[in-house]
Amino acid sequence: MNRKTLLVLFTVLAMALVSSPTLAKKKKRKKKDKHNITKIIPKKEFMDALLKLADDERVPVASSTLVEKGRGKEYYSVEKLFDNDLETFWAEGAKKSGYHEWIAFHIPDDSTHLEIVPGAGKEQFENFNRPRKILVDFYSVKFKRDKETDKLKPSFKWLGRSKYTFKDKPQPVRKRIPVKLPELAMAQRTMYVGVIILEKVYKGQFDDTSIAEIKTSAVWGEDL
Image (tube, rainbow, N blue to C red):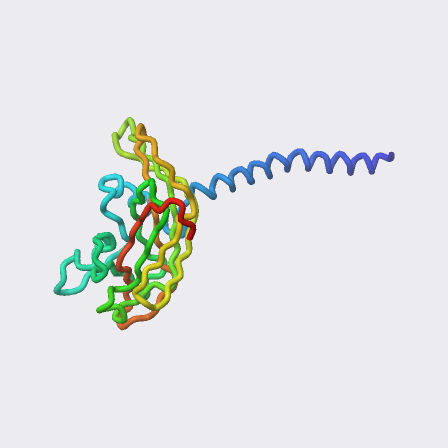
C-alpha cells in the first residue's frame, strides 16, 4: 500500500471519528426538542398562560377575545366555553379570521375524550366565522417554586396532537385523546393542558371566529 493510499485512509478515519459524536449530539438534541417546545404558539405566551392556569385551573386562557361597544369584556369570554350553555360562546378578537389564535385549558387527568362544538350557537351561527379545522396539542406540565424569588416556574412536555375537522353546522365533534393521561402524583404540582389552535374557518358575516363549547369526558372501553 503506497503512501498516498494510506494518507486517504487516515483522512477518512479521522473525519468519521470527528463527525460521529457530532451527529449523535444533533440527534439527541432533536429528540429532546420534539417534546419540550411549544407547537405553533409563542413559548413566552404559553408560559404566561401556564402560570395563569396554575393560579386557577378553572379559568382557561385565550390569546385574544372580541370586545364590542356596548357589551362588557366578559360577553365573549373564553370562560363561556365551559358553561354548558350552547348559546353562549367565545369569539377571538384578532384581526382577520383568527388564524393561529389559541386557547389553553386544564384537562382532568382521567379524561379520555375531548368534545368541541363549533360556532356561535344556533341563533348566531351564520353571523360569526366557524372553525373548519383546528389543532389540539396536549401537554403535561410541572410547576416548581424558585428558591430565590418564591415564584412558580413551569416546565412542560408535549404529548401529542389531534386534528378536528367540522362540517358547517353547530354539531359537536368528539375524539379520543391520542395519549393516555394517567393520574398525576399528588406530591408535585402538575397538570395536563390542552391548547386549541385555529386553522381554517367557514366565513360568517363578522370576521371573528367562535366556538360554543368544550367538554372533556372519561369513557373507558369505548373506541372512537
